[in-house]
Image (cartoon, rainbow, N blue to C red; front, side):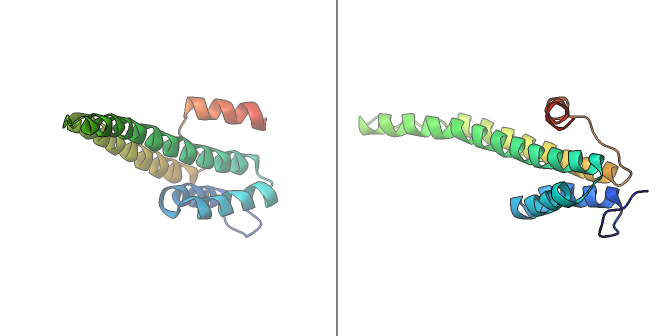
Length: 138
């Protein structure tokens, strides 16, 4: 089992990166991933760090895109209110809330699974992200 320059097992460092992405936010994630990318030699660990950052960004983009939908309908509702038509799109808001909940659950399950498997230097395949990482890191 290979170790990092800190003496921590590579799998544990990868798990820390995934869990930082889930619980710690971008600051801790970028600090851990940046350290691994700059100072560690293990190629698997470097790919894991890039995957954790990429997945965090993908989920943030998904949240933002889903959040745009009710915002667009709120603008339409506000414009209609100008001409005294009181219209609310509560169904759209409810659907978007459900979508956000599904995305949040998927993110939590994926990051917990990746963190668990990375202890033994395993991973869960995420085809789009893995393909991009292989394309630019190999």
